[in-house]
Amino acid sequence: MKLVFLTALGVGGATVFGSAIGFAFKKISHTFSDMVLAFAAGVMLAAAVLGLILPSLDYGGRYGILITIAGIFAGALCLNLMDRVVPHLHRLVGVDTETHSANANIDKVLLFVSAIAIHNLPEGIAAGVGFGSENTADALLIAGGIALQNIPEGMVIIGPMLAAGISPKRTFLCGLATGLVEVVGTLLGYFMVSIASAILPFALAFAGGTMLYVISDEMIPETHDENTSSATYALLAGFCVMLLSDFLLS
Image 1 (cartoon, rainbow, N blue to C red):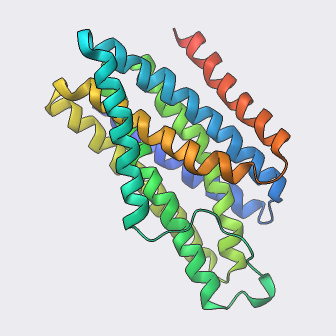
Image 2: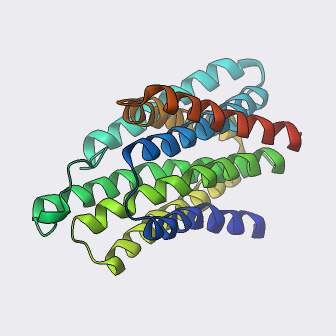
C-alpha cells in the first residue's frame, strides 16, 4: 500500500513538476508543444498496450480476448460520455496577451484545464489498476509512463493561463489541482481491484481503452494539425522509450 501511495504522489507530482517548468518557460512554441505532447502520446500508447491491454489478455483466461475487447470499448465509451457531459475545451488557441483581461479568454483557459482534469482521472485509475495485478514491474511501467507524459502536459497549460491574465498563484493552484486528480484516480483504481479482484482483466482493459481514446480522439489530432513529421517522430520516440523500459524491466 505504501508503494501505491508513493506512486500516486509521483504520478500527480509529475503534472506539478511540469507546471513548474512551464513557469520557467512561459512562451512555448506551437511546434515544440506539438512535439512534447506527441511524445507523451507515444508514451501513453505503449503504456496502454504493454502495461494494460496485454496483461488483461493474460489474466482473462479462456474468455480473455472477449473480456479485453469489451473493456476497451467500455473505457472508450465512458470517456466519450464524460467528454459530452462535462464542459471543457480540447485545445487553447488564440489567447492574445494584449487583451489578457478578457473574460472569454479566462473561460477558455478554465475549460482547457477542465479537459486536462477529465483525462487525468482515468490515467490515475490506470496507474492504480496496474497494482491490482500484483505485477510490480508492469504497474511501475504504467505509472512511469503516465508520469512521464504528465510532465509536458503540465508544461503546456501554464503559458496560456498566464497570457489570459490569470494570476501566477491561481495558475499554479490549477496545475496542482489537475495533479491531485491523478492521485485520487490512482488510489481509486487500486482499491477497486483490491476489493473485487475478479474484475481485474476487465478493469485493465477498461483503463487501456480510456487511454487509447484520449490518444486517438485528442492527442494525435491536436499534435498533427501542423508539423506532422516532427510530431510523428516524437510519438515514435515516446513509444520506443516505453518499449525500452519494458524490455529492461522484464
